[in-house]
Length: 119
Ligand SMILES: [Ca+2]
Ligand SMILES: [Ca+2]
Image (cartoon, rainbow, N blue to C red; front, side, top):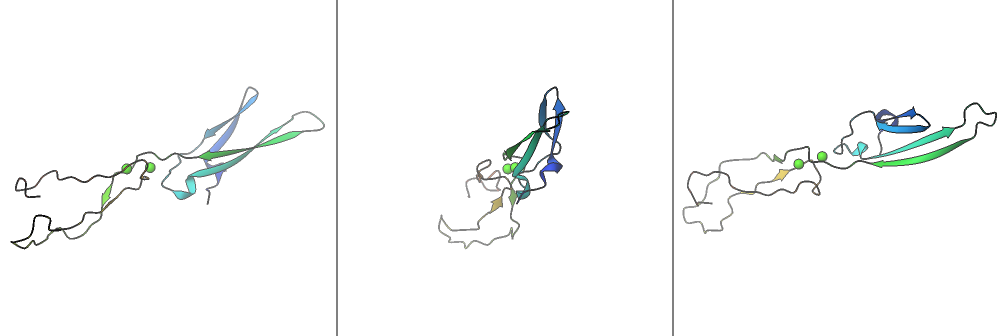
């Protein structure tokens, strides 16, 4: 599905060329704004024939890293048996990033804990 291209692009005449410019910000995270098709007509002025030609321009939007990751909410208090083995699974942390995996891959690390080397 594609958004209405005429909302996002404008064509202006500069000297003898038509210049296609972005008229509005596009957002890769909006699936309707990832791809645009624009048809441009060049037409003779002041001739009886008024010949014209049409050109199809296809525009693809690149993804940029413009969203921070978001950690899925869930319980934050867990109990571990006193005799748990070293590899005991306490919990899994799941985070999502609205940007594509091509742009941002996630890694996980501990930034602080109350007892050094516990985890
Ligand atoms: Ca990101
Ligand atoms: Ca993005």
